[in-house]
Image (cartoon, rainbow, N blue to C red; front, side, top):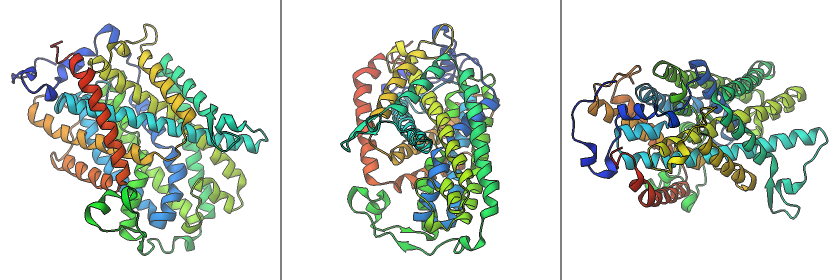
Length: 502
């Protein structure tokens, strides 16, 4: 790509804000022991995006937000959340086409803002993807146990997450799922892509069944009122209240216009994962062209499916009667269609498998990129001589996530995952503006339109959803960031390859 224009040596700047040039990032991908194998196409990336996005959100959150926040207008909440993701997606697409290197927001931040911000966002992504994978694995285990119960087979309580005494046991199914997925990821990206393609095909068919089979049960009366009148929430006190409530003293309402946006902050979890497409840039044949297509294509497909499903389900069953745990399947049960209900439950269990796989894939690539830069031990950035995958980081993280999934007793960590993702969106949007100013000479196969307007809108929309999350979520997030700073100053700063001039 040539030599970058002369500018002050980054090592002469504050060590915390030294940046790693795009050219150096790309050269690092050519080191034989640390080079990932290129095997993915635009179709593979789109499948990955759809595979991770269509999961817990569409199968579970639809009923919760319709019943508690927006009524039939939940379709508009999905649109609002998709707009936030679309703004971020445009920023991700430019970065991924300019810096086609593993690591996603971490790598982008390192090239534009500096080492410490890059470390913070990388540390944030490791937490976000680990928690997301563990929680989805536990959800998958619940679906499988339900199907086993239907078939007359039952796991011992101690191996199903609860002990006979009512305490917490070990979730064997969740543990085994993560280990199997880890093995598939170690063997190779192409195998992972093939497995994911089959799973995604099954999942999309199930979603289409919900849409087209459900149309026959839609009753127009269930849409009235489409936007229920606003109602006081009663408010939450202390750290359980949304941060915006503590900041302004205003208690948000459910339903009404505010309810649509409150619901958007919740259903945002349903879109998490499209950014993982960017973590696979280094393993793509033509990343400058294919990664933007994969990111934006998967977002468009999932938004259309989400809106269609929410419209059909709220038409099949009055929003006040929608199930919170399994709204899609239970809507068919309420309309005396048990066959479709069982098929949807099966599809949900299959679909969550791909979500776990791609979350673990994204986490291992971020960890790999941080290791290759020396911010984590370099041994974890070595690739397998035969499979061309970062097997050490994949195995380490796979075992940790499997154990967390086996012992976890927390059913809802979506808020913590949400705040981590939104924080990454903010950093990437800022990075686009910074890199446009510092490196206008870089070739950009995809350019975010209307810069700086689109990045500014992305930051504003992400911050708005963040302040609608509970204050306790911000507190937990802050604690994890403090732990990350301790690790950086104790190890990463001193072992940084950039800091050592390598």
